[in-house]
Image 1 (cartoon, rainbow, N blue to C red):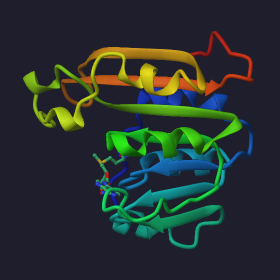
Image 2 (cartoon, rainbow, N blue to C red):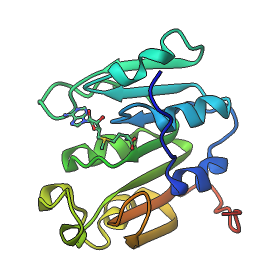
Image 3 (cartoon, helix red, strand yellow):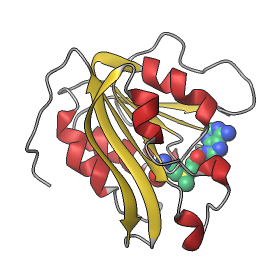
Image 4 (cartoon, protein in one colour):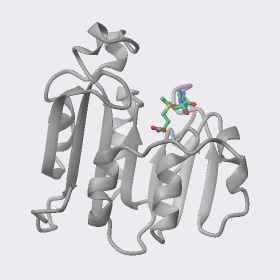
Length: 182
Ligand SMILES: C[S@@+](CC[C@H](N)C(=O)[O-])C[C@H]1O[C@@H](n2cnc3c(N)ncnc32)[C@H](O)[C@@H]1O
């Protein structure tokens, strides 16, 4: 069984905004640390990655759908027409997917996105601007369709020094929920 990895505090903080029992999409899920979080919270989870070997210990888990797909090779989007109560993306950036990510957020759904951002070059990989969000980029991507609940761009000391950007946004027809405990 793989070593348990720390959860993103951002994802943990906003997990309660995901409607109870709603399906969650963990895009570029890796070893599925957030897949595991949402399964444990009682959500069905669709976990997508080009390498799903890190999910082997979860095979057969009720409520888990594993989709092995390369998201960047020009293949059709693997989840056409599917909508999710949460779309979770952590430490992954492929800008052409932004429209697919946004349209995958259900009418009562939440987008939880966190990845490396401009300034991270000073601390380590990634250093390529293709993999670093520009200031405000997640807001710019989301705000035409979603209402911003929270946004940050800055230095994080843990799990290693990095510059990250992160957003929590909901469909605009859903009231904002304020004052979540950290
Ligand atoms: C840094 S890991 C992040 C994993 C997970 N989201 C997390 O935070 O623990 C990036 C993930 O993106 C996946 N990935 C990279 N390029 C991909 C592609 N073209 N299609 C699908 N997944 C890809 C990798 O396999 C890897 O699991």
